Length: 57
Image (cartoon, rainbow, N blue to C red; front, side, top):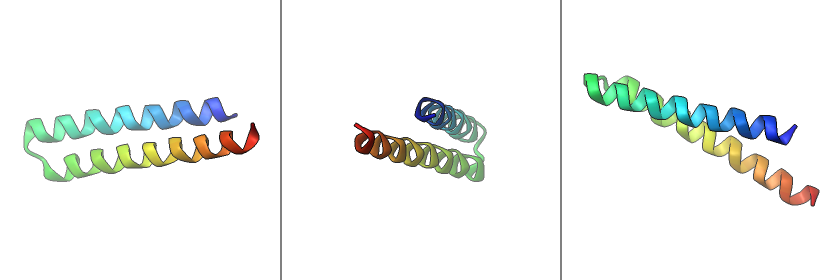
């Protein structure tokens, strides 16, 4: 299960980075901010899974 959640976190980070890059390219601050938020969400999810893994082992 943890591997699935980590892959979702990675996907969310990549999606956020792409959204941020496109937002910057077209000058859309809202899209840039949404991209940063998506990246932060992905990093938080990944960190949560790392903590869960630490307690399992």
